[in-house]
Length: 261
Image (cartoon, rainbow, N blue to C red; front, top):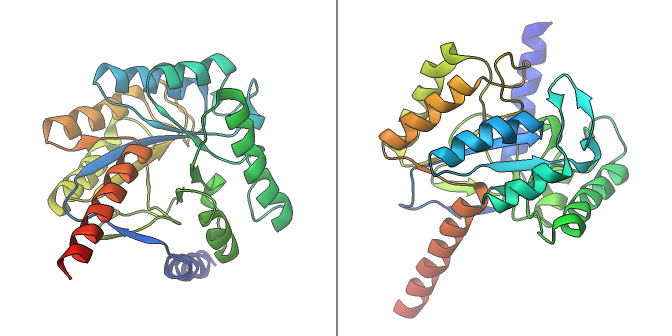
């Protein structure tokens, strides 16, 4: 049964990665690494954000404002002051729906309206338009990949791998950063591969604390990744910063090509 379920998951992933793609080329701009925090728990900012800032780096926080002032297995969730501080510190605020729905558990129309509600709530609260999105739980359908991709600058999933050569803006690849320092060798392997391929590596996690949930990591693991990246010449950048760089380069390349014809 497990093997069959895994195979179905693989087929679904292959299909979703192949349809409704919206591509830009990375060209020679890499290597990049982005650290993303989903939902987001307070510890992702109070611990994770402070760590990144101490290294002169910034992260991307995908916020579901419906979780504000609540508590769950990830710990205390975001508060208004956390959002204000994130923006003051130069981190990026992204959209993660409003209610943190899975598209597999609610009607399509409700999910789509919740995406709009989440974006508008952030815009109304902060004046910032969160144009980069991540799918809650990583759940996505072909229809939503197309429809939400038309509304956002990018949509991030949880399918592992590097973003290299042609980047699918409607389903950015990302890799979980979960657990303690014993997971650092696996993370370093990904960082090293991104360095070799001059690609864009995206890590995602949730809470950052001494005893994290199964969806979070320790500060030691996060710091191990950040310090290795900096020591080895990977540029740590938010999703917005990477896409701004890539899209600017693509526009320049197209202009050069057009002028040479």
